Length: 163
Image (cartoon, rainbow, N blue to C red; front, side):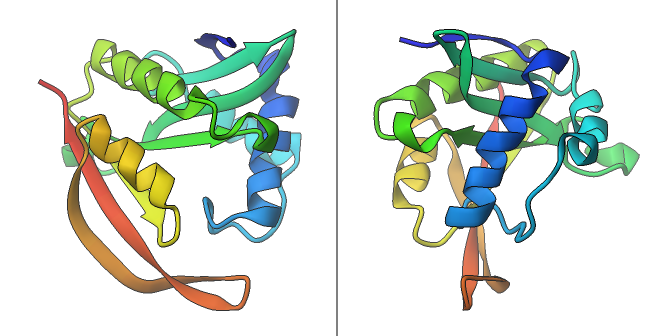
């Protein structure tokens, strides 16, 4: 079973590789162009105690990651973050998504965040079911807001409030 720990700068290349796999082959992200380590360095540096970024590592390799990212720069949203989870294709469907989710939600609570938002594209039924099982509730649907692989897609908005 992979170990989970706070991401370090040395993990960034593997984090980017996992993300780019999702960019090219899934609707888990609406990015359509792959990223470089240099592209993602600012994103990486925006994480820390307030907005945690964790990785799952097995045999010395990062096989998945999860983050809480700033939802908005407007002050009133200071306690709100967006949850993201990405898992290397070979490790999907083995419970790692749940393990990373539980860990990032705990880290968010410890960081003092009030709530987390998840945006999940239509067709990602497993992600929706996982979010529901962890206490996320549906808060809305944004209809046909993104186009990927030649199709306009809905995005399901989900939220969890930390108690």
